[in-house]
Image (cartoon, rainbow, N blue to C red; front, top):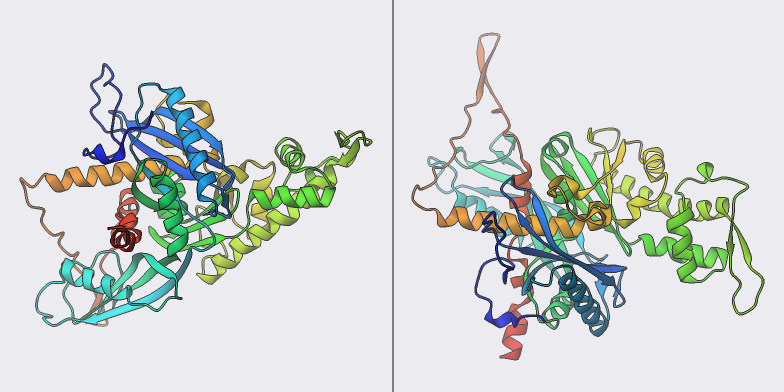
Length: 474
């Protein structure tokens, strides 16, 4: 049912069903979310309005993944194949050969660095080559053995004494520098994801960090400008991405998620894992004060034992303890980058499967002191989509498709070389007179867009984890 990946030569996720009557020639792009509790595959194509039409959707329980990391490759392969089979059932004409895959896990870490270069020819304007050199130098940053730098994201640039410059190309000066956000990951953990997908007879078109994919799905231009923290509560981990003044300021992976809450309920109340999960979903609350004190859940006894009476209040106390711990981690990370104390006007956007817990917004606001809301990926979906896909638990998968389209559209723009693109002119510094002295102040800042953020997510990440294996098996 799955086509041979080696025969695929087209661009994007590509053996397509027949074109619909509207003649939409956009490629079908497939996102594959390998999570701790579920594996989801979603195939989508943009319509003429730039919205995603969902052409296929399938999911399966995930057994070989813990805390976002693939531990059992065989079980993960079976789950991927089951998700694909369910995707084909939703659209028999669909054939999938290439996928965009999300990566997460508590092995993903981030750090801040600073880099500067003294220019050799300071009479010329700053060029892209010099910026590339500045970024390239950051790949020499020391990191622990076994880890690899996944991405280097420039933040604010400086040119001589001018600071907070979004794009220094076209400026002139003696020294150019920048603050950088560096993301690292365990090489073997990421290779295990790669192996699992490839042994499922699929080609990994690219790997995308899950917190960045989720952010793309639930953010809009206003969120990027106002400043937000995206908190993606998954099964095994909680992913955090913080944006301020249009810049990705911080990412983190908190090693707790919905599975930890389920396990706490199982141990704390002495019930089976399936019963704990069902109670969490149906009766769980993140705020014990909102739970009814006189409400009880009856759990059938095991092998003839008497039924158990579980207090809804006790259930909520267990959930609140773990969710408060997760939100304490979020507050800690925000303080680390100096963005607590209401600096983020957009507040916190909660997404992922864990965001569906009752009263989570109130708990988040209480612990962090910031406004909170649920982030749904439906803003990017065309009308008439499958209702289930508007849930926060599919934000990562929708974001993977959006990143795939970003790469596809950029490749189209690069092919259009009929008119060479001119470098943007640097904005003129503002002249201000103080006591008869002319002072040059910082030029006005450029406004960052959602497309700028999508472009900043590294493309070609999968190649970092292929080279050595290719040499080994040749």
